[in-house]
Figure 1 (tube, rainbow, N blue to C red):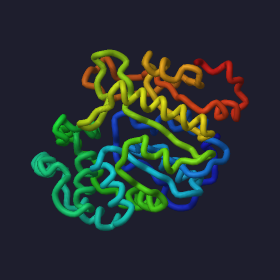
Figure 2 (cartoon, rainbow, N blue to C red):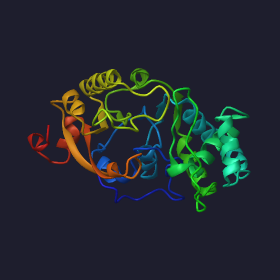
Figure 3 (cartoon, one colour):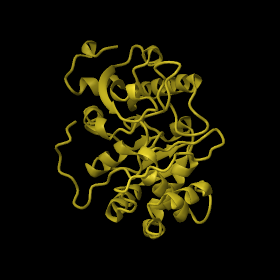
Figure 4 (cartoon, one colour):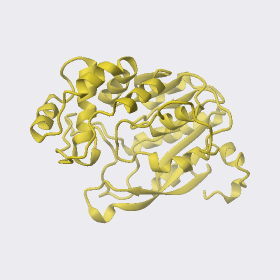
Length: 296
């Protein structure tokens, strides 16, 4: 797969929110393994949706996509953006990049007002919070401090409209990843980008909401990915290079990639880090790479 393709006319759809572990910089590596032809697209951990928006902008989504997440506020934001982008823009324009305004909106925890207003609140907090983080405490309360970034763009109308056009062709639901299985068929493409398995016991930012993602969840995910591959579904999975990852996906193609990470509470853990992609075997073969040369 190459990114040198003719794009549809108009503004390119791109992510409208920033999440820790976002995949924008890894898109060239991920897109290499996108199949030449596939049916429906499914992204059960949508997050910032970088892969979905890239595939949409490249004109590769020919059927309705399914986007899902267990983060109810994120799902609500995407639904509102899809269904009434102009109302979301109207509410977003009312916000100001001021500390007092930020904490007043944060106190509502994206639970007050219409869906469009709550979506605008989420977008505002994401743009004006520290380093563009989305993070919840164990009570499910958004707790990112004010970012004090005078250059933050609160409302990019054309970008939001472009995202809305892409989302118009997607089903957006709040759901655990396993619930997607009932709607996935052979030749579909599934991209999995769960919270990463920690590299060590002290690793942080492995999740972005109160529920977290446990080792048992990672084992469920690995079994789910293998079930899909056995059913001839094209799977691309992003993961940390943790020992657990290599254990869970042993026998499948595991490709090392490098990613630059700028978000961590400890400065010495920021910078270029090794991550991996796990893919269906035929996605490696389509690139004329010998399967045995892919690091297991």
